[in-house]
Length: 181
Image 1: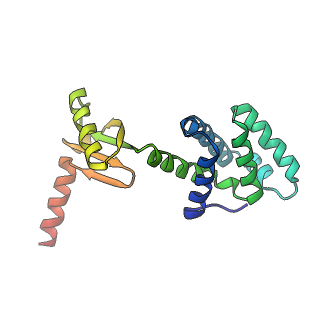
Image 2: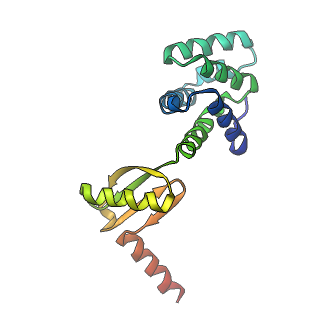
Image 3: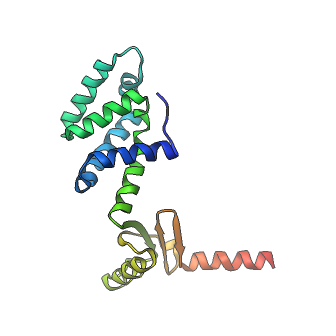
């Protein structure tokens, strides 16, 4: 079995999204993440799935059992079996990552993380959501965490884009400018 990366993982994610109802994706994706994590942690299970000493029928039986336990629809069972035949089932974590990205794009949504020095009041949280919705052109779902080392302000990460409006970040920029002269 080989790892699947980049465009290959995206290709498989697109295939997955063409098989299932878009409204089912968040629930199925969460379950697939658990399966991927289990495969990463449990070497014996990973060996059964990848070992050439097991037949395709035996692997299909294992995948069937797994799908029954997680209550996956038949389309997901077929998809996992297909990944097994392609030899890329161990790359499920990367495929699921792309499934989530493509799902958010299809739904015109974005997920992000807001880090602040203190807990933010709801009015400020709503202003952040509204501003980011305008900037991204998407509905924005945010998680919040606190980090007192920021001193003040906020840091927002959406996808690979970082907006650092924290005092710590601004001081870092000022330091870099002073060093450069």
